[in-house]
Length: 378
Ligand SMILES: Nc1ncnc2c1ncn2[C@@H]1O[C@H](COP(=O)(O)OP(=O)(O)OP(=O)(O)O)[C@@H](O)[C@H]1O
Ligand SMILES: [Mg+2]
Image (tube, rainbow, N blue to C red; front, side):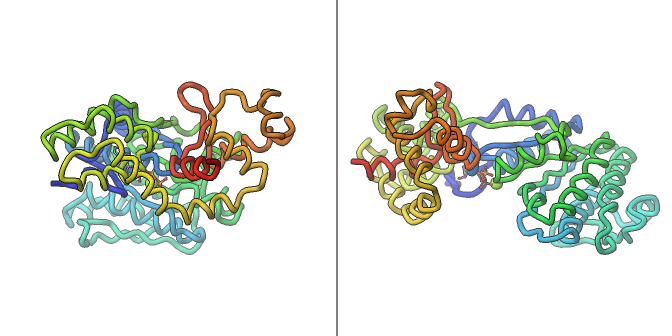
């Protein structure tokens, strides 16, 4: 049986729901609407992207897609290399025959010495840029857009870990952002998708009026998968494994422990689905405690890095999620001034430690961290 609960990217049978976001993302891709996907770490950005790519590849022959990761870039040239490499792959997918490519390449990517080649991942066009030639980013993006128009294709280029650009030297970062923006606002056949694991940094890059990416993209945000969607998904997986559904008690234990955080849902269910029989609620709880123990080292490090006020608020929200952290009653309960709270809450939100749930309660994002802090208070 396929791995229904991967700790890495989930697609196919392992992918639960997100129907609406897949539809919107696909529509943006087909209509060249640049898109920013922002959400908390390990909520499923890469999985949403991978699944939507699969959906689109099955339904549309003339839409070609590439995904790149900027995780390891360290300077302007490494950024240019990574992006040109993917643009070359897109070109290779539209020009799979050498003769066609040779002809087409006379008119495109001229300053980048294009060379058609066939590698282990299929045909591609090798593009090379001069050192620090940031303007070639603009040129290459516009050329691939023109090539797509000429060949009757639409394209998507997804850039993951995009916040890494902002971590380069500030002048270089702004120059790269400006070069990409310059091209992006003139493309008609190419959709650029930006995503990354730092929600706070991406938000700053795309929502600060003084930055080049301001107002360039439509934004997609993701919440947790709804409880009834997860229940359907898990019961289907349970039928496949044990020919019976989970009991209501076991199902609600799974929801309660993981708080529907997709990463922890998969970590827990991967253990439970090794059982011979469907797990009971108490087996769910003990597996969950075991997972939290394993995460203990990382959690202890995260907590140690916080200031005392931040720790105090986090601990109190782990025990009691609340709607109004600035109310006088709450401030006196945890013995903090309004001024301190005005700093702590935005910090915890920006660092993806807490979020505001559907019922407007401030609560912890990481269910293991929550469990750990609760266990310290007992
Ligand atoms: N729709 C989904 N259905 C089932 N599992 C999912 C879904 N989305 C994400 N997951 C699971 O959640 C975890 C995190 O997914 P993914 O790597 O896609 O998140 P991410 O937001 O890209 O993470 P990061 O912030 O680290 O880049 C993985 O275990 C993945 O299998
Ligand atoms: Mg990811």
